Length: 133
Image (cartoon, rainbow, N blue to C red; front, side, top):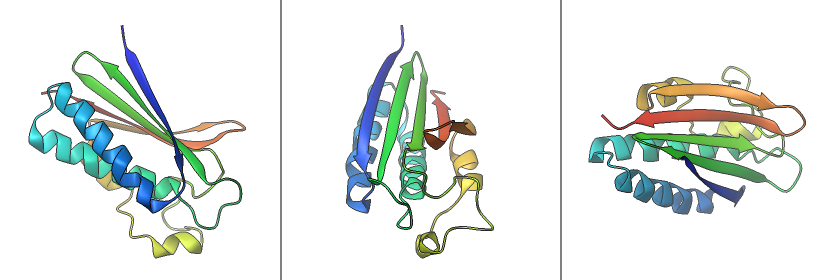
């Protein structure tokens, strides 16, 4: 049986660190080594930073979901307010250019699987999976 943890996060930079720390603690409990935990923390920071778009309308909320399975952690970050698109690299919104994002290529280097997806009527998200080695 899989467990799921869900965070509804205000779209403010100061809330990235608490989410990142909570997920790092979860990863440690699942048996990930220190290097894998650091990869997860960096990937979570990058995905959350991308979900925060200063130019977006709405409440500025995004959602972080952690699906816990045996020897596997899947983290989904979805922007619920239509902010910056995760795959928009060459054409970011004007406000997002102020963020120093590492992009999907780095997420793919840090995590075992990375998928960008869209939930119609909800928003765009990124799903990242890391497996215990």
